[in-house]
Amino acid sequence: MSEVRKLKMLVVDDDRAVCSSIKLLFQRKNFEVVFAHLPVEALELFENFKPDIVLLDMNFTVDTSGIQGLKLLEKIKSIKPALPVILLTGWATVQLAVEGMKLGAGDFLAKPWENDQLVASVQYLLSKVSHATANIDSDQPVIIGQSTSMLELIALSKHVANTEANILITGESGTGKELIAELIHSNSKRANGPFIKTNLGGINTSLLESELFGHVKGAFTDAFSERVGRFTMSNGGTLFLDEIGELPLENQVKMLRVLQEKKYEVLGSSKTLNLNARLISATNKDLQAMVYQGSFREDLYYRINLIPLHIPPLRDRVEDIPLLVKHFVKNTADVYDIDQPYVDEEAIIYLQRQEYPGNIRQLKNEVERTLILNQGKKDLAERRLYETNVW
Ligand SMILES: Nc1ncnc2c1ncn2[C@@H]1O[C@H](COP(=O)(O)OP(=O)(O)OP(=O)(O)O)[C@@H](O)[C@H]1O
Ligand SMILES: [Mg+2]
Image (cartoon, rainbow, N blue to C red; front, side, top):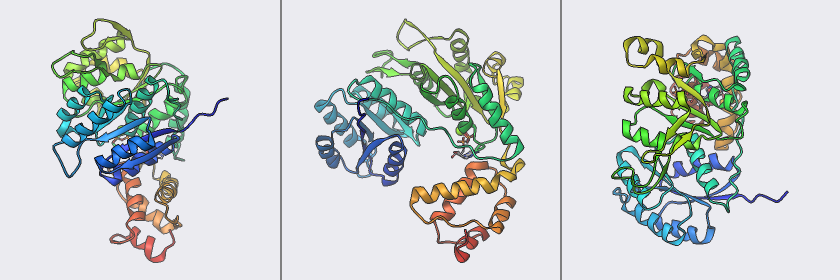
């Protein structure tokens, strides 16, 4: 077997936190990641480090117009036209991203981006350039739980993973819907294919269409270059439609058609393509009530909901809290390279008594924050943590 060399990624962003989080994400996927915080550094690294892919932030704080980012992109593209570049931008500056696509950027992601989406985009763009071996490991998600309801849910998820049936995952915010979707994907026949996530919330109708369907060059006024849509990216894998309850009614009809016929057309193209993806949807909304109110199409509801999976809120499974806390403590300590404190019984009892409207995400954030900020010991858990140092 020939040795696969590490893929090299250059991240250009003046926000160090952004750089570190990207590094953590892609190091786990066997990338070598370097940062440039200024455009000049970027050009230097571009010459010396010879990246396979560049992630480029458009908004340097020194120059919020984005011109610097665009100039840098232009320069990179003039030196190496085929090099994939992904733009990172705020929604406020989507126009800038459109400019960037004209200059040959491969994709753009709005901050805060979703890690899966970023990985999928990197994977896809690298797979298009032949010299790079886009062999990105897909990790099995770690799902912690010992409550009967979670154990049953995990077993059921694995059981249905192997079918091609459309799955709808429901549950409050932060209960782990995305994690269960990943679990299903990684236990399915499509595990070696991509897991493509699309967030259907908060994007306007036409932008959403171009994100899903993609567009050819010249499809509309701003479409100066091609954009690959999520339907195409998910070929051979799983398409995860997150926040499906947010899908505007106008898009619901088109979505239904694609799911029914398993066919779609890229915007501006008359060629019909086959959708070859397993569909998993998720929502924290009561879709049935929305159907009743007329804001969600009944036919679409039945189409996506062949197998419903419901994740109970954390308050209904507080017996999961001890394991979750230990898991998050260990992870946080690893990631931030700090000593792993011991968690005593009283701290656990304290944590079990709290309310978690944000469910597991909230618990996770609280553990992380408590570990990182060992100052400002406001609440009991934090005081216990650091005064007695028994965590
Ligand atoms: N059972 C679990 N074990 C370990 N980590 C978990 C578990 N459930 C959730 N998490 C973590 O909690 C966070 C929230 O999970 P996730 O994003 O899957 O929730 P969600 O239901 O999709 O939330 P939202 O509705 O807000 O999108 C993630 O960081 C996830 O890794
Ligand atoms: Mg989610």
